[in-house]
Length: 613
Image (cartoon, rainbow, N blue to C red; front, side, top):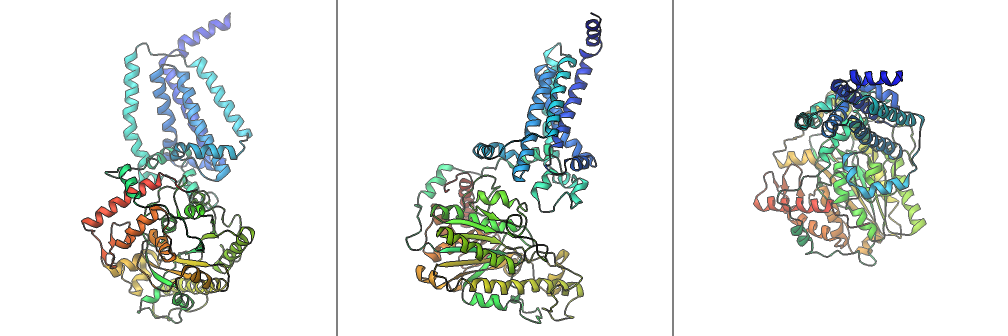
């Protein structure tokens, strides 16, 4: 009896007081937020969680959403236990889904993933969930918190209007608060101490950029990019009618040649700059290969970085491929629909640019990385003298096992900048000594040393396909121009014009080379010599050019973009275009602007309609 009386006194003095209930709602939601934060990383959880406390923004923006959500539920329902339970279920389940996803795929949970129900069901059926001591402890703590809230948070509003007024205040606060999650300045400033620690964070890992800022913050921030903005004036029926003018076409019988694509890291032809005093020609083998190939310039959208832009626009045929979080139309999918196998290699980590998850969405599966094929050698990453023979080995293995036509797309790592400024690591002079400052001379020799090595490896690679009975096309292109000193100091010293307001400067800045080589079997099968100089192209149109040369029409989308390519072979991310005569127009005329608008609408449609697979 004494216990009941004491309990009633506590209820009267404390548990039913509004201020105490409000305090418990806030404290419990902070606890839920902290537990959610602790599931932000699958590795080094303790170290990563502790690192969050070194930055006020990280703590504040990870804990603010559960607090606001709990208060809103409390004000709306007048029940603290409902506020606690709803907040616990929402934030803990989301953080747990993120944690499992990191374990299984090294891929965090994005807001966009909630919209991909089919992919989520497939993933859930592919993995076995498991329990850990920490997970069990977290569940116990949350359940215990629920018991405390049920018995101790008993305060209730006597009238409705204060509750609804406070709920309205919370909702009104969402807009200014949301700007904090959208702010790029805060995002860049939020990196915890672990961001600069190579033991915890890798610079090019989108996953670790996410985890180092905490799950709750990163998840809500991802919501701003989850819903793609519909192009102005978008009309789905209009786009469907446009594509209906073309009929999907398969590859004609007897013309299913193998295609091997290789994108060379930072590979560009500097021999076009006559003012550079070369001591030896690093491009000798590459030029010999060009002499027996169909070649041209590629007007990429990027400079000295952003490799995946060229990579993914080439593979999808879209200037803007979108997030690629779900299955997305691509040439790999089309070729797979034509009984091709589609695979490839990159001798670096699969987590870089999240290729391990993105590439299968484009139809490249299986795909090989350092983790599952390429071991470390003397260099930090596998160089071209190992990668290129490895591509051939994989190709021959696939042919022997299945006999199916092959599409292979690989991305090299050799050539990746920055290049050493203090010593010549290749031990050879490729530019005349004394022509430039020592820093620029070292940058140039290290870059051209890599180019020379890649050119010789590429020649040997192509040579191994010459006498094959199987018809083979090899497509080679550079992803972007190289880094040449901070603030482009080496470009300046070399006298290279990067003024993008002129056609010469524009191509010096964005231009790389492409070539399409065919063995005799392919030339015979397709009736094309595959030689000569081709047009300057956007990367998204390179496969259109290849289809044209092969005599393939392809899908309705490919036919539409092939026609567009003939009118405007370059549609650049800056808004500039090249016309059919190869002339740059920085400000497109009315016709070009309308074609670009139409292209954007068709791309939007294709990003949301998966047609092949």
